[in-house]
Image (cartoon, rainbow, N blue to C red):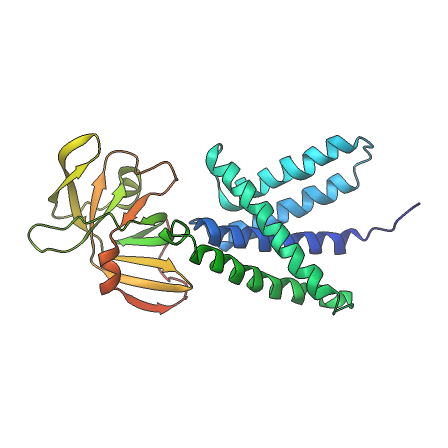
Length: 276
C-alpha cells in the first residue's frame, strides 16, 4: 500500500505542533528564552521529522529512537536551551505530558470539525486550552507557582533569568528595611559589565551549613517579574550577590516575595530595552 505525502503540508503541521509544545514548555519551566528561539526549535524539529519520514530505512526501532530521542532532545536544546542531565530529562518528560494533553484536545475537537483547513486555528485554540489546564495543575502545585521569569535592568543592559519566589527569603536591609533578593555571581558580572555599581552595602544572612555571613548588595534600576501573564515592575530593588550556586533547579535568582507588594502590575508587553 502506498500513501501520498505532501511534504509542505506535513512540515507546516509539524512545525505548528512543535512550536506550540515548546511555547507551553517555556511557560511550564519559566525558561528565560525569547520566542524567536522557540520558533527555531520548531523549525528544526519539523525539518528533522520530514527527513526521517522520507528516510528509506525499514528498521522500526531506529526510527523510533530518532523520533522519541534525537528529535525531542534537539528541540529542547535548540528551542529552550535546556542543559544536559536532570534539567533536560525533566523537560523531556513534561514535553510528553503536554503532547498527550494537546493530542487529547485536538482529538476531542476534531470529531466536531471535519474540515482540514481549520487545523491551524484549532491548534492555536488547543494551545490556550492546554495552557489553562496546565495553570490549573500548577494551582494545586505550590512548587510550580514558585518559579517565574525576570528581566533585571542595570544601566543600559538587561538580563533575562529564571527565578525562584522563595517565601523563606526574609532578607532585609538593616538600614532601609527594604526586602533583598539574591542573584548569582555570574549573572551579576554579565549585567554590570562596563558599569560598576556606585555603592555597595552588606547584608547579613544565615544558612544551613554556615552559621552566618554577609553578602554585598546594591540597587538595580528595575526588576520586571513575568508571572501569570503580567509583568510586575519593581523600581530600584536591592539585590545581593551570592558567590555560590543558588540551587539544583537551574535558577539564577531568588526573589524576596515582599518586593511584589510594592511592584506595579502591567499588561504583558514586550520590553523596549536592549537585551544582552
